[in-house]
Image (cartoon, rainbow, N blue to C red; front, side, top):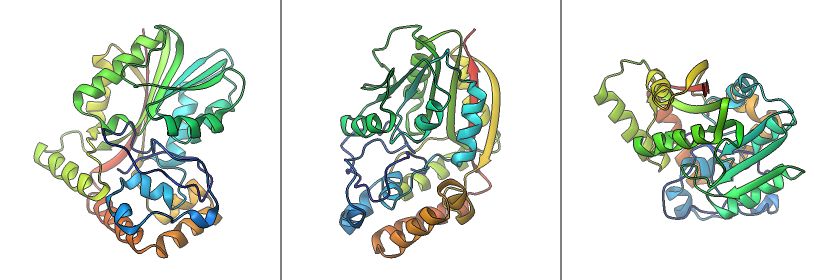
Length: 301
């Protein structure tokens, strides 16, 4: 889908997805193989790239920041979570570990990532290695972690990929893990305005699914807030950012000029990737007035 993982070395070889629902959009890319040499970046065949989820394809081209609101909205989310050395942090679907790296700069007491795929977990472990840091293999809706074991839980670009029932299940799991006063943060794709017609919502979801090969189900900001409130959480922070994942200016802001140029080069020299990226960009441009990204932080009373 549009949204997505992060932090593989440029040129890492991304493993093709297994059967089943992806845990994250963006990464998040949910799984990747060990990094390989840069000249192996495009080792996958054209037919495989045609079928691959959009976030997998972008990661294969070297993209690290795959969240819908970009690095800027991720940083706003992390700031709003107010993580300190006293916090025990849990991240759902850390992907390749980009956001985890930002969180660990704040030196929380502990960090646990919950990743559903073992190969993705192995990649994330390399990104977060250190004392009191771990990646476990599990389901974000049933992590197996102890109740009340976290003061901060967050996830990015993964609820969008779930059914309504699974969205609610994952949010309830976050609530179970949090202690009283704990914070839950999300960064997701959203639809706008809040009164967007149901027919238009369905049209956008259908077009997105066709372009990115993932059944994305974004909500409006009001619906995202209601999802959290329905689980007993109190929303304390909201921020939005345009869905400009494939815009050149966002690419440079997220990746830096050198990596952005390398990504562009990889796309240009790979016909199957170029076709897919142009298709995704066309859909994003067509619905630019109705697509955005939202970050919310809510507190457990």
